[in-house]
Length: 400
Image (cartoon, rainbow, N blue to C red; front, side, top):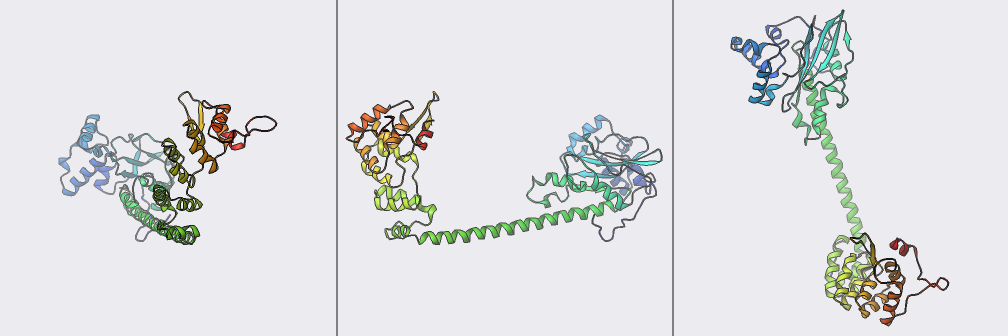
């Protein structure tokens, strides 16, 4: 607990039930925040008589509460607190700037020679308090410690900041919640002063944390930029990049390579595309469809420089049958012999053709073998012992 200057933390009231002022006597059991404000203002102006007896009572009827709520929802604040027990009084209260101005009341009751404490709110929540009893009224310091030690399963410690912390995640900064909670007491006049400073410190701590995080983020961003610059400089020194620059493509970093690829592909610049392939660019699988569909040999050769001719196009049909194709099977199914030859020259594997098609709906092993031969290509290579197409681990996984 932090102590602040100009606050007498040793102050101890003689009794919780003695009234030091007329205002304290009148407000002692008035639960509603709005009614307490009306009474306080009327007393200050010397016009208490204009406040009806019912509004000065500890509780109001359900009709009055409903009327207050219809005027403004936060006029209901405190009106739904539980009734006072015999010989019980309020020694402090939390007032929240929520929609209905919720109130948490800290109460003391004298019973069997001890002062018994409890904390209540307007929603019948259970709060644990420690200590639960005392022989004498608390000093101000003891009361502050008592308040911060109150616990609830859904709230954090210290209790004085619990409602601010609970709502902090919904606000950009703590400053927005500076006045969300107010803690006051008619018995301990300086209790409010203490917690106002606590809330000010809480806001300042939040600003310091925000500044620290901002500095860390700025430092991390600067570090990332430095690493990116170093990486970019290393990338620029690569022979393939320098050759592309001399050819007029001038990629501005790896992330700009796709723009250059599109440009080179539109020109069918095989040399540039091969250089871009060595720099790690891999064309999406669906790029294969268009040149095969259009039977465009030049585009197919160009695409082979930057795409894997043994890639699988995998999908489930509406009957849940798993199908797979490779660029070579697509070309063979389309009867495009020249395209099939180009793909094999570019590294397409005939075993991949079999593994992608044989287990699924579509061409069988014999169909593929016949298509290859009709295209003037070697038939499917088979294992000398099993007389079956070879099965590698990748092909097997594609057909599972």
